[in-house]
Structures are given as structure tokens and as C-alpha cells.
Image (cartoon, rainbow, N blue to C red; front, side, top):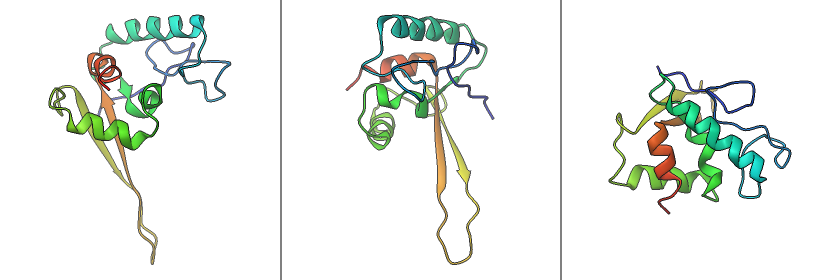
Length: 122
């Protein structure tokens, strides 16, 4: 299974940026110029990484889309993206409790080129 990392200033191969604008530390449309520059420096570092799928869609969908479901639908329905080449689907089956339905967590991990192209295809 591929290792997926988060973007922080302390981790060189991550995709979550420490930002004063957002308490979660995620780059948003209202981020400052320095935060945006840091984002692109981190993307460059990711592109030099040995990790083929270093970007978790969970970390970047909000840059363009209003809801994660919209981003997932756009990723899966776009003929330009190929599963196993541009992204991988990681399914995590949550343990079901008696009498209740379970929630099947799905993570989508992307290559850096897929993430860059994906963010501009709307």
C-alpha cells in the first residue's frame, strides 16, 4: 500500500500547508501569497519524491470544489484519469456494529501531475 503524507512545513513530502488563514492548516482560495508560494514549493518537492501517489484527495479537494463528493465524481468520470496510473482507490472497511450499518471509508491518492491537472479541469 502506498504511503500518503500530509503537507506541513516540517515534512518535506507532504501536501498540507501550515496556514494562519485556515485553522486546519490547509491552503484555501483566501490564502496569502506566501502560503501559495509555500504550496507550490511543496508540490515541487513532492514531484521529486519516490512516492508515486503522494497526494491524498482529502487534502486538496477544497481548493476547487465545494464538496468532496463533487471532486470524487469529477475524478472518476474524467476519461483523462486512469485508475492505477493517475490515482489509486484505497478502501478501508470500517467494523460494523451489530444492528447498525458500517461506513466504508475510501481514500483516493493521486500522482502529482494528476493533482495539478485535476485542480484546473472544472
